[in-house]
Length: 149
Image (cartoon, rainbow, N blue to C red; front, top):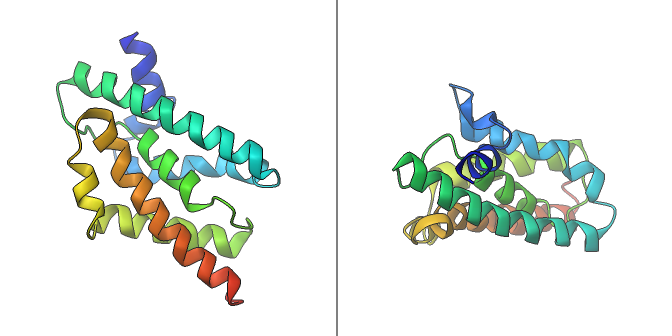
């Protein structure tokens, strides 16, 4: 069970990349999002399942590694990117803006993002990225709605 959870939590070992694993984990979302964005119900279903699997796998992997939030766990970034692009029309501009906004909020962690990071186990590992994704999503919706994207 630990090998499976580690493999999932590191997004097929993308988290093992020695430099900027969170950025690579975020970028891995672009392997899926463009294919799912045309069907909001499928997108939402995949996102919810991904979040549940992310909480589960990151909890077990972190426990096995004896760390609270190891940098090799990047499924949280993948989950956050799914939240970022929820109901956003996917194109080059929104991809660049969404990726940039998510990474800024994920690294900066303004209130209340840092508060969610303090939650226990997998909830804390994934929770802060979900809120960073929500912040990025709200800004993207505004940019799209008012014609900037």
